[in-house]
Amino acid sequence: MRAIAREELAAARRVGIIDFHTGLGPFGHGELICAVAPAAKSFARAKAWYGDEMTSPEGGTSTSAVVVGVMTDAFPQELPDAEVTSIAIEYGTYTVPEVLGAVRADNWLHQRGDLKLGAGQARSRPTSRSASSRPATNGARWCGRAPTRRSAGRSRA
Figure 1 (cartoon, rainbow, N blue to C red):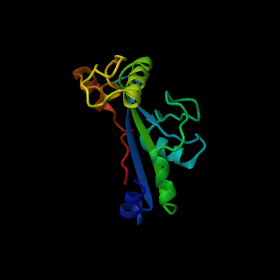
Figure 2 (cartoon, rainbow, N blue to C red):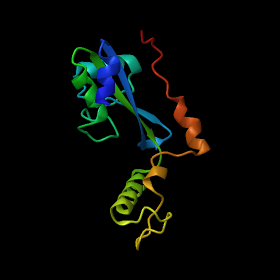
Figure 3 (cartoon, helix red, strand yellow):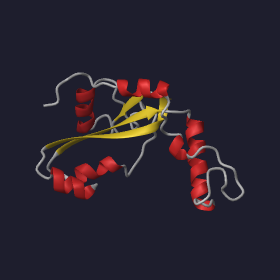
């Protein structure tokens, strides 16, 4: 990602990044998250671009915990002369316990299971659906709701 930023965006003066995630939040709803403090200039830009629904883990308004070392941190580091505005859209899929249970089961399988065996055949511990099936869903109800996320309707010239 760093190499791509340097090679493809070196001449850019304004860069907008959208990082798509699935897992947390109400089923099918896309939460707009800007992972910086609400007092940061990039948070103000993100809110101006995408509207008042913008949330901040640091400000306590997001379903997401405060995270460090996220992929979007690389862009301002690699593009020091650019005005970088990064957000994530977190689309809710299943309940937090279901998602965490699937991630835990998938981790157990990778650490102790035999990945060559089919689902449910991991050594001695049965696992629920893998994490890859939990954070995202192909269900018609979810697919019908998730794409409805729209920006505040302002032009991004």
